[in-house]
Length: 35
Image 1 (cartoon, rainbow, N blue to C red):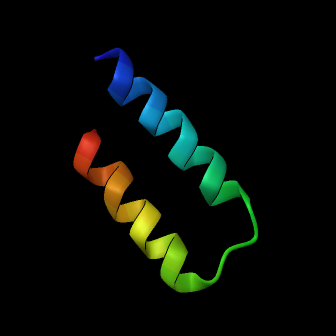
Image 2 (image 1 turned 180 degrees about the vertical axis):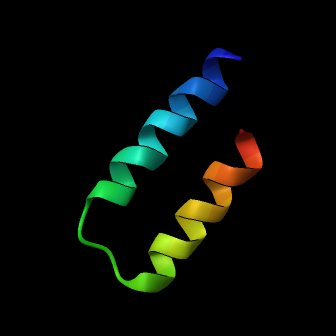
């Protein structure tokens, strides 16, 4: 469970960065899959 929380934190940080829309959608999909 701790690893999932860490992964979610990292993904949320990634989403805050200035990424291209493809990276954003990939990160969003990953976040959704671990909720």
